[in-house]
Amino acid sequence: MSALTPEEIAAIAAELAEADRTHGVIPRITARYPQATVEDSYAIQGVWRDRMIASGRRLVGRKIGLTSKAMQQATGITEPDYGVMFDDTVYESGGEIPVDHFSNVRVEVELAFVLGAALAGPDCTLEDALAAIDYAVPALEVLNSHIELEGRTIVDTISDNAAYGAMVVGADRRRPDEIDLRWVPGVLSRNGEIEETGVAAGVLGHPATGVAWLANKVAAHGDRLEAGEIILAGSFTRPMWVSRGDLVRCDYGPMGVIECRFV
View (spheres, helix red, strand yellow):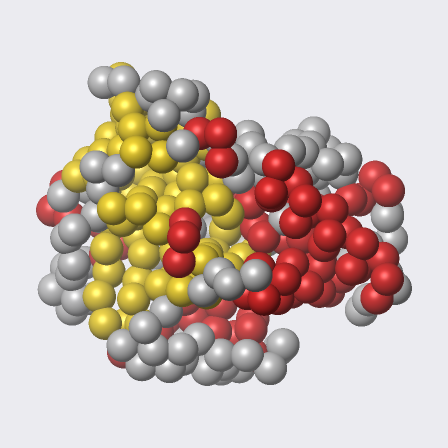
């Protein structure tokens, strides 16, 4: 249920668009609008998304966040969320990522899925998601938080496009029936030192479970996942802070290695 007026929703979306443009941080939304609901936060994200599309950016997929206990404990938020991804935020492994483009820069270890067929809720299952997925790729997510971190709730995070900044994708593509995706490992290092480890089963028991959850979630907003979309399925490690000059490497075992440098 919505508690904010359309004018308040538009004003917050404009604040977030300006923070995105200037790579700044705004005061917590829930401190200023304590009545704001999850429905309001997706409305704010939707207004922001439409502004970005109107400015010429192209939507290429969606990210799912807070799908593992590691991430829920790291943020104090106990339910998944989602945001959108644009074409200018996707980097290949080996790329250089400009740290000044983001705020509160952290990295997470994930798998991403490219859909070969559309996927619609509201009764989508893991089996439905696996049937719709063309292939999985290893991926790093770069977090980008435009809202002060202290005390934030899921309302703040969703409003801020689920803290999505960018993704780095690996070259190894696997069909879901080629490999047991639950046991894909992630060994994340910064400048040669291992910082985080995990396995993909940490994401809701199977990383593609989040794809089914997302199809059901967006169905409530009259939407569906389309063929060709990239779905970033959620982190199975805690977020790792990065700074300019850091070399980040993640070893996904049978699915190869991703490297990137923050400049």
